[in-house]
Image (cartoon, rainbow, N blue to C red; front, side):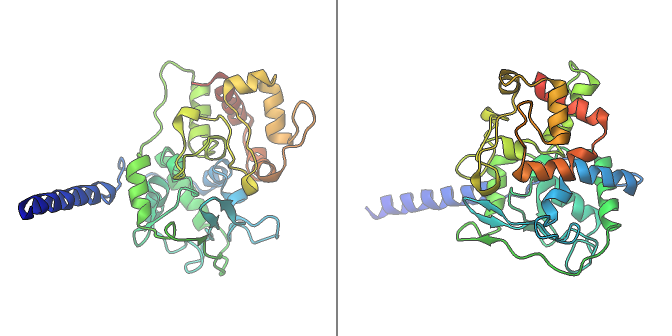
Amino acid sequence: MRRIFKIVLALGVLIGLGAAVYFFKPVNGPERDLSLEADATRGNYVMRIGGCVACHTDLKNEGAFLAGGAALETPFGAFVPPNITSDKDAGIGAWTLEEFSRAMSVGEGPGSTHYYPAFPFDNYTLMSDQDIVDLYAALMATDAVAEKAPEHNVGFPFNIRLAMLGWKNMFFTPRRFEPNPEKSEQWNRGAYLAKGPAHCGACHTPRNLLGAADASQHFKGSRGGTGGSFVPAIDPASLKAADWDEASLKDALTGGFTPDFDTLGGSMGEVINESLMHWTDEDLTALTTYLLEGE
């Protein structure tokens, strides 16, 4: 019996060590070229297509630009978007480009701080090197706001940051956007925007019990809105069934009204006002082309 016990114990230890190696191995992706010449003006546009302003500014309470947003209520707790101004203490002004790139690409900040997927690094990882470099330059040029945003209000065990490393190893693969050579340049631009910086799926794709996007239900709608409100499906079949076309979709994304004159309010209204209204017509056309055509 003692020999059997020792064998079982040894197997348990081996399984535990194997699980630890798997769940806590470093998460790295393709190397980025961060030597590219930065364009802060272009970075301001990337800031808009990336939804940075709507998320990191407390618009309802007239908070300072990019100094921290309103809490995002989820089943895991309330996540508060941080101050991302150029302030060296309250914001990210002390970050290097390499640290910023790692945060955007693998969801890990300075000091090996692992971010929650409420920050859509699983989308931002797809962004181009040029977009990352330009966005960093734009953020470093913002007015510094010396006031930290409140901490997240997340209960045990979700408040254990290291657990996010295990989450990444289960659900996250750092990568870059790869154009589909069988599709048009316009479609590919729309796919890049929707999947990458605009992170449409962060709200419009349902998540599993551990908060990971369900790829089999891409753009099928979710309870990811403010206060758990329903976010509608935006896959091609759903859009066409509701009689959306390119013109009506572009009008809604910039004006906030559906063809039936319903209002796109709440968090989508903020996305429209602080992001989509600032897009070029070419990018809006590219996005609607992708959404209506699909994969």
